[in-house]
Length: 455
Ligand code: GUN
Ligand code: ZN
Image (cartoon, rainbow, N blue to C red; front, side, top):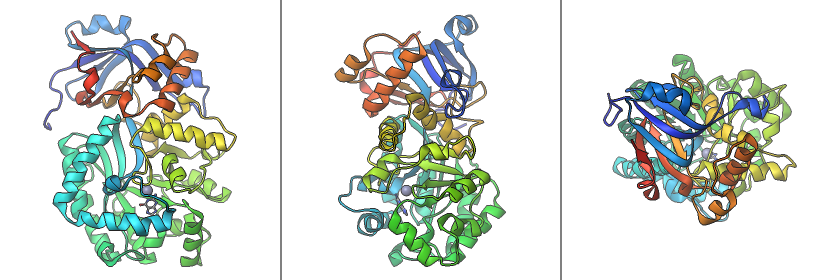
């Protein structure tokens, strides 16, 4: 058992919100589960043992310590389906779109991660920041250096976090210091999979940066790794920017489009997560649906880099549904907050004459993200048997939010939809009162220290 793991069963009381169905495909009122005064019982391993209304559960938990969060809303921990930890320090880099942004800012920054001590320092900051924002699981790009992956997993393991990460594979069109070779990337990735994949809550993602920085041979070897280790993930970028799409077409003249470059290498699978997918063709949407691959929708990044507006309604269509999660895509994204990411997702929808309800957005940030990462059986909701990673949100975390949301706990789903919409538009890390990992307190906001009651 890891350091700091729960040793005794315990209970949490408050208002709970999670999802039992996909609200893009089911009526919202049947998809949302709102328990106004609920109890979550967590066993000694950090697994959810019981969940339901206080009146039903209370008689069974009379002997357990109960932590009560009045005036808060408790959600499953947020899941960030695409983020780069080495880019933490280069957030908000001015003035460029994708390809120039990579050359001018990203590559020089990622070179620093050859130094493992430096990587360790940033990993600590990065994981603190995720937890401060209520994010308990993420799919993470490390840098090209194997030591940058070790630094990440060592610290994630120490904190008992469920994290997925991988070494960047990149053997062309980048500075020599950042390039591996097809063969070395294969060997190093293989060794990292053997070292980290399924070690506790950790999982490995084979991570070619994007088609432009990999030779066909490197992509082929990435596909070979997926064959050799069938339950690792594939994580890369896809169809983010128009200049990028044109460049890929010129680099791979025999391929039928961007997705086909990955498909020919065997990289389009049920365990593949593609970041962005802004400029996909209809045929590519259909292929992703057929392959049961996932897309990470990264609205703050897509707006910041001027990449474009993701067609969420097409990805979530009933005819050709694709698994979708939300991603911050730090450092092209501008916030670690999944609430702020949901805010920008709403605005992307608006610019396309679409709506994105708070319930749909919060689904993407929780159970939708878990399903995109094939972790829906373990994470993303308060179902009994799942792992107790959750976030305690304060819908009144600023004076303006308190004015907007009023003093009362929502009584109906209509009131809840309104209050959570304001929360996602206005909320950020200040709205995160506490974050729990396997039932253990992993972060607590200063102002909450005197507010919650232990009995
Ligand atoms: N495409 C290739 N590399 C990157 C990256 O680091 N960030 C983003 N947003 N897109 C990419
Ligand atoms: Zn990215």
